[in-house]
Length: 137
Image 1 (cartoon, rainbow, N blue to C red):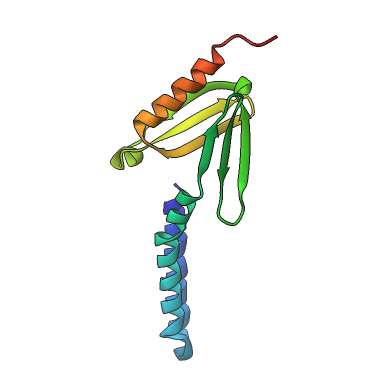
Image 2: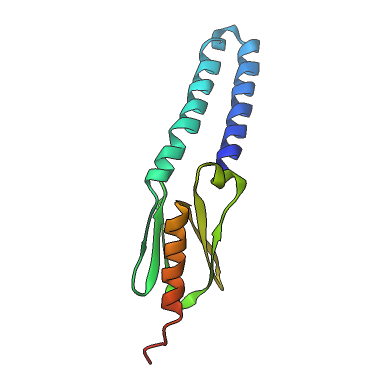
């Protein structure tokens, strides 16, 4: 969803740059060109960088997620806190043959985007299998 929001914001910025440049002849060729180049970079490069910076690992006792380009977020979800796990398939993700794994806890939901359906089903089954084991009390 963020992709479309960023694209829409970028198009508004390009339109404003054209409007400003029309009023000032000095800015005419350069301001709109700069806005278009910036928008193209945000549409073509930023999504690839975001995808390349996603890391996750399912450990024995927790699910670790790390993502971000400039602001890196590291999330650790203890398996004992997980309430349910869902594999989300939407029209948009189905177009690319991908799914989103959503892990729900009492504190909220955590997602792992861009998984292959078989991989997401495998991770979901591994999490659920660990939740069904008795506690080591």
